[in-house]
Every structure is written in C-alpha cells, then in structure tokens.
Length: 207
Image (cartoon, rainbow, N blue to C red):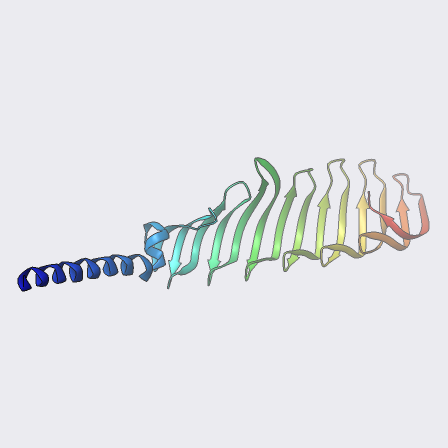
C-alpha cells in the first residue's frame, strides 16, 4: 500500500512539473509566440501582432531597427527604415480605408513622424512636395491640383501661412499672403498680357 502511494505521489509530481514547464515555456518569452519566422531579436524576422499587424524586417535587441515593412491590413503599409522601434530615416507609407486608397507619403521620417522632405499624394489627385515637421506640412512646399493650379508657398502646422503664389492654367499668377489656410492681406494678380491688379483680401479660401 505504501509503495502504491509513493508511485501515485511521484506521478502527481511528474505531471505537475511537466505542466509548469510547459506553461513556463509559453509565458517566458513572448517572441516565441509571435515571431513566426526568422530571428526577431537580432537579425531578420517576421512578427505577427495581436492587432493583426505584421512586421517583416530587421531587429536589434528585440526591437525593430534597420530596414523593414509594417503592414496593417486595410489600414496602412509602411516600407522603410526603423530606428529604436520607430519609423526613422527614409520610408513610404500608403494609407487605405478598407480597399480604398486614401493617401501616400514618401520621404523622410524622424522618431516615428513624417519629418523632413517628402511627397504626399492624396486620393483626390492633390500632390504636395515640401517640408514636413511632426507629420504636418511645415516650411516651404509646392501643391499641385487636379485642375492644373500650382501653389508655391509656406506652411505652418499643416496650414497655409505666409507668402505664396498661385499659378493658374490660363497663365494668371496670383501673389499674396495666407493665414490659417485663407488669403489674408494684400494680393496681386498678374495677367498673361502683363496687366496687374492689386486687392486687399481677408479670410478668402484657396478653392
């Protein structure tokens, strides 16, 4: 009887240790759960997140670092450089809403934000080429519109602010100042035949 009790006792201990060992294996290292291929510590690997996002690229000390692609299905896809787990360097991101294209940015990144020189192409055909700061248009830039208009000027915190020039397809050129996306102050329009017309504008939108 005592021998049987000892056998049962050792069986219980054995399976208890086995269970704890298996449990420990799964919770000890989250990378073992989500790193589906390669080396997601130091090297090249593919990592799947609970949200459905997938990162495929280079890793350093367990974080995204180097060249890599982050895909969030039906939301966005980023292809470019990473530094300390953030988008940093040169990269391209394409935004989608479901199956519909929203916008594309190609250019410089810093600390996870669009920062530096870049190009944005929107779904309505508007294209911006210029300076970015903290993911906003900020500095000098050129915007091209589907109807042929070209705007050259200054942005601040994502809005037109400062001096700017509009070149129209028919040859007219308007020079003036903007404040918070609206024409503000004196402006001059020059016609193809050389005539000029000056006017005072306030809170007029660039339509």
